[in-house]
Length: 134
Image (cartoon, rainbow, N blue to C red):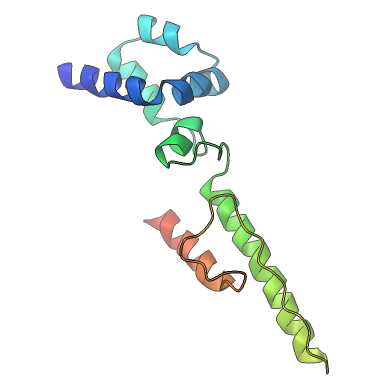
């Protein structure tokens, strides 16, 4: 039991703000009341089962402004970029003139692996699918 209390105490100390917001938004509970009225197991379960895109998940990722931006949104943005680039390729093949390639739409997470505006949307989509599976 002391291990759970320590884990919960550490989480509360480091992420009190995001947890306060998540408990109110997701569960309709005040964190302060939940800590007083619930067991360690209940609190840890509530924290562990916070949905993707929660304030806690964003804070742990080190990007606290990304509330509700989940891997699903990353994948949708990658698909939109892929469609845009595939449309460009189709139009370019049918055009006698050189057409300017589209710029990739950046996501809020950024991408340290990207190479400027000419990202390979196929590689991004494959990477996100692999991340979902792993």
